[in-house]
Image (cartoon, rainbow, N blue to C red; front, top):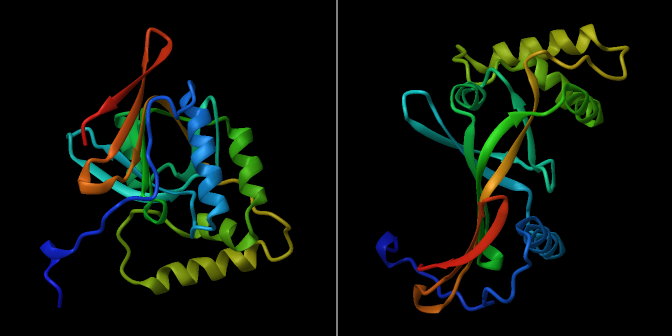
Length: 213
């Protein structure tokens, strides 16, 4: 097997300069996200979200972006999950999009807040019924003895709501919005001299700069 230290790839698809990017980072994100969609990448809305517990211990996991605009980036989860508990204790986080096929990454930092419950309900009932059942069946992040516990719970809920078009929205499930104050757009370049362009909110204005790779 090839030694891990010898694994490397040269990046040479694109460049990224301060003059290339839009003045507003949300517009730059929309541009790159559209290009990721056009490239037909598998799940381009998959993003890693990192949160920090009250103890200072960080954790990260992959979730799916379900919407974005100038107000922030929206995802959904169980409020009693590990990330939900960490957001409750420390309402800040970082999300990371990694599109290796395009030799690009986007890192976004900011505060996190729950979205309005009506927005969570609208999204919840748009999901397939099987996914709605799954939200009820899983005590997310809690230890369980075996998988059969989930399957039995799934079966019970399926039977309970067999005649219903949609399930009610669980009290412990809904959306969060990360409201950015920092963006970094990373474009792979040759010799590991990558382009890193950042936006930082300072005095209610977005300032643009470059970071060394």
